[in-house]
Image 1 (cartoon, rainbow, N blue to C red):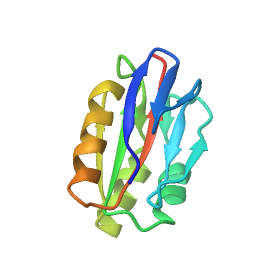
Image 2 (image 1 turned 90 degrees about the vertical axis):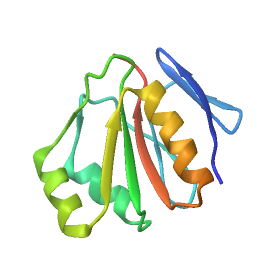
Image 3 (image 1 turned 90 degrees about the horizontal axis):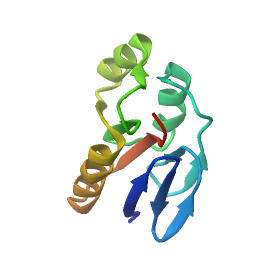
Length: 113
């Protein structure tokens, strides 16, 4: 199980490893670099669905600048996968709670604005 240790402006720490960029955490626990973007897109959501998560958590940045694409939300409803979005510090707490509860979780985390 992946544990997100913390975030500060411009970085995130996962399982003790510091990442100075946005990340995706796939349902299998692997971590990929996410290109900084102020929108969580349909393509991103589709990519995260490959691991068949029950839940996708989106960290919208330190002050919440990331918007969720309407098409991603519509696909989430069709696939019955809930998207939870919140500012990144709160989103990582939710990620840890859900993962600790045994849920199969994926996430996209924006670490700046």
